[in-house]
Amino acid sequence: MTVTIYHNPGCGTSRNVLQYLRDQGLKPIVIEYLKTPPDRATLKSLLQKMKMKPAALIRRKGDLYASLGLDKPGLTDDQALDAMVANPVLIERPIVVSADGVRLCRPWETVKELVPES
Figure 1 (spheres, rainbow, N blue to C red):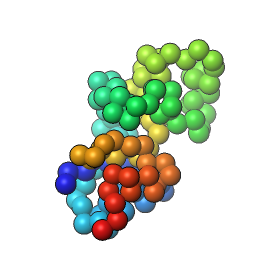
Figure 2: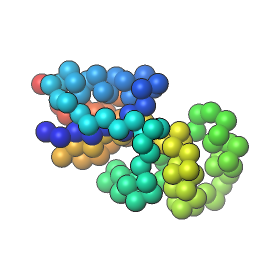
Figure 3: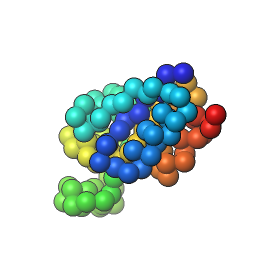
Figure 4: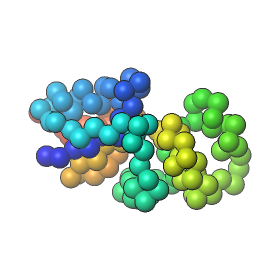
């Protein structure tokens, strides 16, 4: 089974998901999205597969979210996408892609919906 994880090694949740995938005997494709960010089309595709609006994928922790005015009412999908493409640190993580679907794995146990324990 091919599994891809959009990973931030500085994030404990992301590390837990990656370790879980490896513990299941998988060798996931690891995309460190801060070094290799998804382009707008990829991000939009991931959101569609997760059935999420762009604003739901924005990481709200940290000063950047508020300093860009992303906390104000009326944020459009295009504005949210533009912000995440320009500032990948705003993308909530980890995102896992498998043949069974795509999920934002927060909490980390959400990954079990895609890859059950073996």
